[in-house]
Image (tube, rainbow, N blue to C red; front, side, top):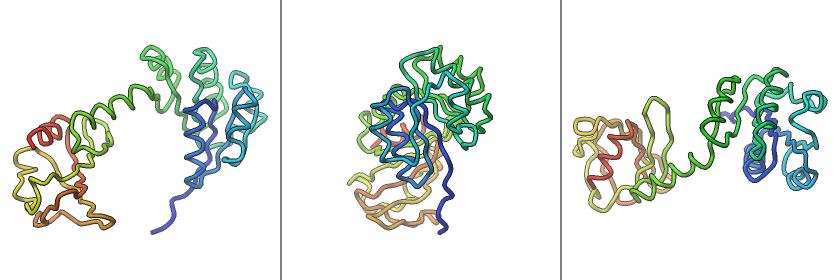
Length: 221
């Protein structure tokens, strides 16, 4: 399998959120520029990422000088000051960065950033809160990804009650309008398309469907 092509990211604002994003992107092999107004924040991540600079995201000239306009993606992770966050978003857009993701502080801020043309507005506390609540509500749900338009992919731990059951006997499509994409058994991937695969307790079953149908299936076990 070919290695995914790396991209270049400018992460502006190196608090806990921005530092985590920058460090993880660098760990995946991407070229990352980290920017913050505070020297201590820049120093903390300087050895982890490709480039780090002390600059003010509110100053378009400062961002131009460190080359933000040449990056594929800008992540505006400034979370404490609303005006700095908004000005920085406007600046990276003006500099021609193709893709802009921005951290928002609340719903009103979210709407403002969307009007400014941010490609993705993130509310970290709400997104993590929903994620945790879903897993707390049903311990069989190990993780999930939203695909938009109400569809999710769920990593579902197969309970003991389904051990030895063929997938086509559960009625995923007929009863719940769900689709099994496959499953992980230990470190091995098992194809489920034929429907004849027998489930084993603690398999990780990947299910695709609407949230309400996924919840109905999980709650019934």
